[in-house]
Image (cartoon, rainbow, N blue to C red; front, side, top):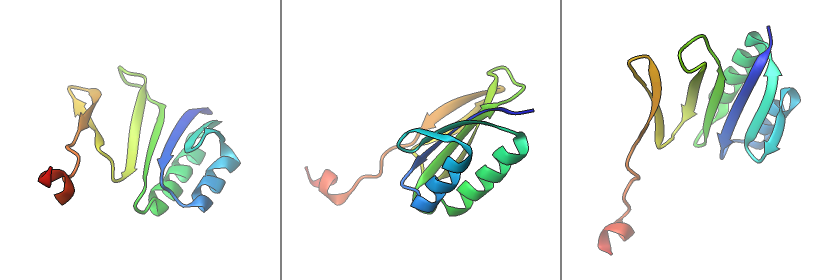
Length: 104
């Protein structure tokens, strides 16, 4: 059964954006929305996480849990989904400090 998915990308290769737009709509730069089967969703995510490189990607899709959805992430992100008693919450990590910031 097909369900809606959202894939958010940041700084990913152009060929990945092209591949994602074959199955979904890029509603705003880096945000892809579509209705696909679980098999297609998993294959899109495999391709995305394999080439994300220095960028980042997030997949949101329906799930049989309290929130009604689940998250998958790939790449380096400041926001990390964390399970807290069955609920997914977002944990923020500190932004890395650079020598310029430390001197001022």
